[in-house]
Length: 160
Image (cartoon, rainbow, N blue to C red; front, side):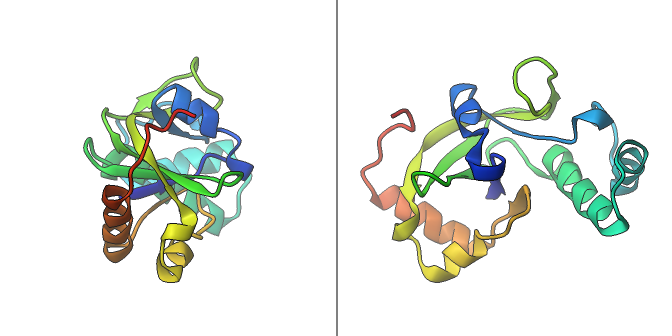
């Protein structure tokens, strides 16, 4: 299970839901489908962004995971800061570089399954999900709790 942030204040959440996808930035590095190691991604970031070493490493790691570690069938979580709910879905496609649909060009298709209220989760899981990075893998114990809460609730489809 992966967390993918929808931007500051969940600014891209509506795009994620309406387009059945998740997306991340770093648009200027272009399509990285054929780059199979973090060093190659780091080099592209170094060329296109004026980042310090630590930020280059973090950005490259997130992009690399988005392209090479996420898999079709993996669960996705994204957070709606206004409504204090997590939207949960499953990845349904491979990485794509799409310059036309969204503001963020690195994209994966998602089937949105529903949502869960943040307050239904334990403090430990809420703290785990509090990382501010754009993308991270969710700890197994927290992922299991999220799925348990999701399965126990009478959830409607994500559309409001």
